[in-house]
Length: 403
Ligand code: OVV
Image (cartoon, rainbow, N blue to C red):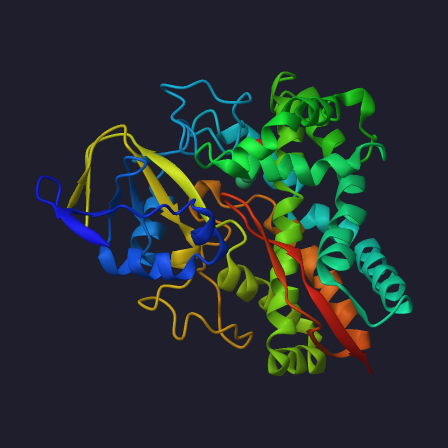
């Protein structure tokens, strides 16, 4: 797979991490990547890549050297116009990043979520009741992993009912667009205008309810914590990053349990506190967000390889989360391990600001399921949905046995 570049001492890989075959099963590629070195040059895209935990973690933490402001996708905002106005959070660095980040940290923080907790636990019970009342064989993606976030999150943001079916396709495109313009991006392109138009319309103050996350973002503008120009773009961040991620995080944990009966037995016996660890272990194991790019702000040497100023670096969160240098039996889904330190939510100043929302959704759904379901197994082959950034599912047929 690799040869060496004498000038920068980087191994070269001709592989395509965004090829459909690799996206379908990225583990062999990631294992080759880690074996090839701390830093590997992907000549097909003329970018550097890191797949080992230590270096991925270090790069995520060093935002001064590995900037986000030039874009966290393959496209470099210094040379190419982004497909939409950049995110004020994801695609910004300090000092610009600070105020939007502080506002969302508060809006999505543990205190704010404590207010939603009771109703989300109840919503999960109701959803699980509905699903189980209709039978014990069903698609865990459509009926649970997608249904639950779509039931609670748009209401929490405060957007109207109409058009919510646009949320998943919009997010699918956002996450495809971090990669190269391959067949996945081309397939999504015809709807981008229409979907963006709908999403942007949901960000204005007039359409948002007066008590949701969206309203709280606008209230932060009233206080002068952010500007009125920033508010709608921050609502857009919630709608971009808050749906497909949690849907695939929940799909990941449901697939993990459907294929690991002993782990479900443990959860079933002890849902609190295991439901919360189980979700983080699933985020480590599956890494719903597989990759993000950074851009070098100076010449930097990593593991004997020179990364020149201005070059893109592809960080493999999913590979770092399966690095045997960091994790014992990394390919095992084990809810008794301590998954903390995983980089599935990123690390450092850009670490997922919505992670408490994701964890609460998962805790609600898993505890509701664990209360009624004694065992869960696959009822047929599960099918992936391919995305340039997300490790995603199309369908996970399951059969459950009630207690
Ligand atoms: C983490 C993330 C993913 C996608 C979009 C955004 C953030 C955003 O801020 O728009």
